[in-house]
Image (tube, rainbow, N blue to C red; front, top):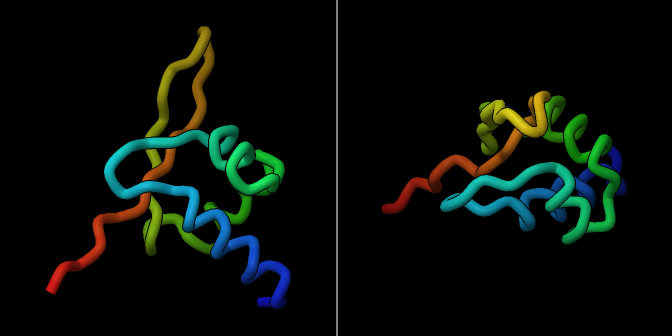
Length: 74
């Protein structure tokens, strides 16, 4: 993974809470990374490892919402 992609991944992770759901467009607003890129990076690098997603209905269509998996507390 390139340093630039690592930086994007960190910024995306910082924008995803573990106690509520956000859409890629919300992450775009916080990071400046286009929503389409956000979705791709999550799917390719983060999904089911540190991020979970759910499908939601929106205006007759659907989209995904994301949240970080709860962190292990020790």
